[in-house]
Length: 267
Image (cartoon, rainbow, N blue to C red; front, side):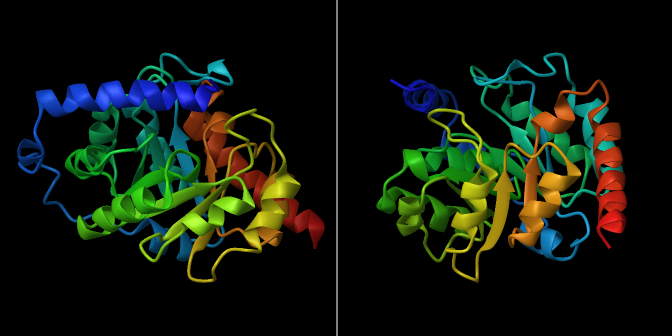
């Protein structure tokens, strides 16, 4: 089994336990469930100079501990101040060191759209995302079939959330459907963890025009950002680059400054 298979197997057990602990009906009474949220897609479109989705992530299977002691309250306000278009919060505990409370806390600290970054395989997790305050959910094409992707995306839209569908391989484009708002192209292969920006740029050109292309993973410089922007990407999901610093929010602000300087140098 590759790491993605292991995560999905663990997620099945985790979701089964969550269903026994809290019913969907109970989730509908959570304080965030009825709260309207801002559109992530519109936020990205309206911020063309810095269409960045900054991520809160403590660790990952590929990198191990990145910022193991990071606290939501210390970072999210700074991301907002940096002017990001969205914020991604990992809620997986076993492999990424996150939890649902991280996202709920982030929701209370900012009005910036928040995406729940999770390995979603069951409708229960979509209701859960709404209950904890998500503006959008991540769906990963590699772990879903076409019908699952359709049903989960439709449910998210019905509940007032947008959908970011993550792809890596061109064959996965067939899983896209009309309920998908944004398409994330992961520069890192989730099965091998190899990064290839050229591959992502080529794949972006095959996407439907109605779906906003988002570059994910492996963006480590202003040059990477501008290369992918030139290739047609309208959003950039960045986690490790910021989180590996002692002050992720400061790193985000400095990255924005680097982009401005690089653009000036290129003109």
